[in-house]
Length: 262
Image 1 (cartoon, one colour):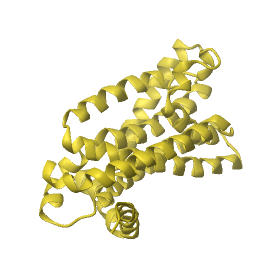
Image 2 (image 1 turned 90 degrees about the horizontal axis):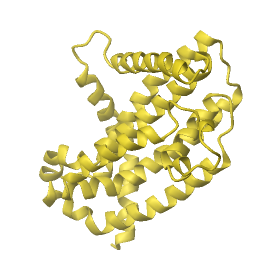
Image 3 (image 1 turned 180 degrees about the vertical axis):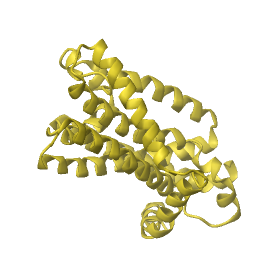
Image 4 (image 1 turned 180 degrees about the horizontal axis):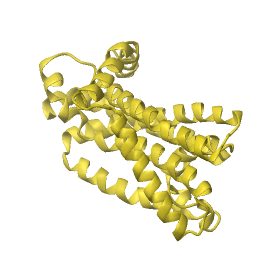
């Protein structure tokens, strides 16, 4: 079997076993909150409190009406939470699942899809915050909101492609987890999550070279009633192409070594 067909077959096998990893993803959340009265809704409640607190503070700092800033901020934080949670746990993903990898034959891509599915479920819970803001401020974004679906799919595919080399390299070099967390902290502040892009000069490098800004725009703009910028689609598709090529290369050459590294 050629290396290329191995990558393709592993991906096909992992996707076809969606019932297993989606069930395990939901069980991860249930187990974490099994003795809690409101269960996974604690995730949404804590995020809602964070959004409201930041919205009240930054609306005063930026001299902006809270009904304009809060929806922008809340959606940005919800999408960022999805991005950062996925990327933040990937370097340690295979290490945390070492017993499965060492003691049984398991498709590594199924482990990655399980993690991605778990974070998608959390993202779905946190979208209730956005719906609550719609109701409170009487916002109707229009049918253009449906553009958020292909936008979110493109973001998820990018995260899957990035997760493959990140998790494999992270199994070999444990410092990658700390490096990733440090980078995510910096990216959070230079990404237009709680500040408007219009505050910067047009074409500013802060946004131009930041893939996270384009990922967030793909989901946030439709939820705010606007079409995402064409550059957001273009950069995200280019990022997907490049990260997929890297993922295929790393997976072909190093995936067999993961069991020895963990």
